[in-house]
Image 1 (cartoon, rainbow, N blue to C red):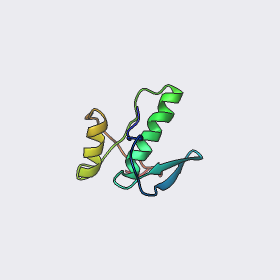
Image 2 (image 1 turned 180 degrees about the vertical axis):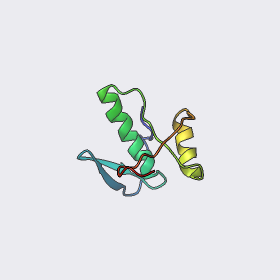
Image 3 (image 1 turned 60 degrees about the vertical axis):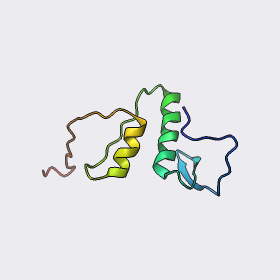
Image 4 (image 1 turned 90 degrees about the vertical axis):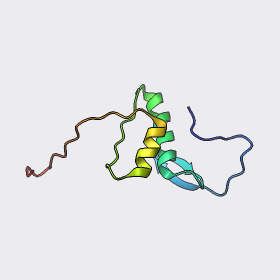
Length: 87
């Protein structure tokens, strides 16, 4: 599933980012996060993944709005475990 309209749309020059050596374009009015998620969906589908896991901090309203528009919210427990053994 594509997240962007591609026919009969005039766009300014895109910002280009690289994911796994592939160029991915993000256009004005389209966040880099949206472009990344579109590419992750493509990659995930190609390797047989059925879901992409993302997270947002409670106060990050733009991220929460984007992720809500694209998927289903799951309330889970998240733990940060230090690599140096401290809490």
